[in-house]
Amino acid sequence: PSLIFAPTFFEYERALKACGGEPKFLFLKESQGFSISIQKIIEAIKDVEAVFICNPNNPTGTFFPEEELFELVKITKERKISLILDESYLDFKHSGESLIREAQGTRHLLVLRSFTKFFAIAGLRLGYGVGGRRLIEKMAHFKEPWTVNCLAQTVGIYLLRNEENIKKIREAVNKETEFLFGQLSRIGGLKPYSPEANFILVRIETDLSSTKLQEDLAKKGILIRDCSNFAGLNDKFFRVAVRKREENLRLIDSLREAI
Image (tube, rainbow, N blue to C red; front, side, top):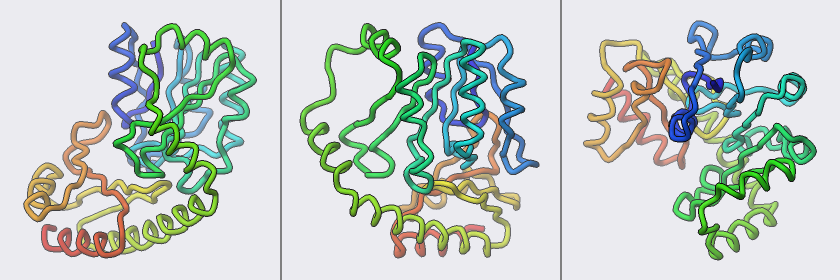
């Protein structure tokens, strides 16, 4: 079995089952703000072959600082457990806390990175993984025959080299994240959870369901993520993405009307 948080990105579970794996869920408690200590994770990794961690976690925003992850890397290495660390949302606030350097010198750690979130180029389907040579060579045997297209490669290299643009994106998104979180906090009947990326998880504290809210907002051309199908959540949770000020204001006005 492999340890997976709940709630978290559903593709980990799907990928595991597709290759005959068995997920073992570690539920994040709402009463604790969906936070969990590394010690709790260490206690839960008995009899597992792998651990999947999304940092920051989608959709809860749960974040593990670098020093805590170092301890988990050490323990999983000692117990010969694979650690898959998804850093797709890390660049928004915690870019300096990546474990990419550590992954290159280990056999059990794989760090996943994505261009689709921070750089908003989802259509190019660009991302990469970093791990030790033996791990990467082993993975290459199972890789599809078609690799990343040349357009995506060229764009990816350009984006990584443009450090000034990276700084501007981070500042702009963080500014709007603070604004949107503040506005959501002022709407009666909603409880937003402190964001660590470019999205915010929100709990509805009225009789309205997240499914009905999604339907109502869709009629106005606004799409939110109904989180009722996430393991560990229910129809009182939804997730919103941080966008430009004009779009964020439109979202806030529509939520006030709906709630």
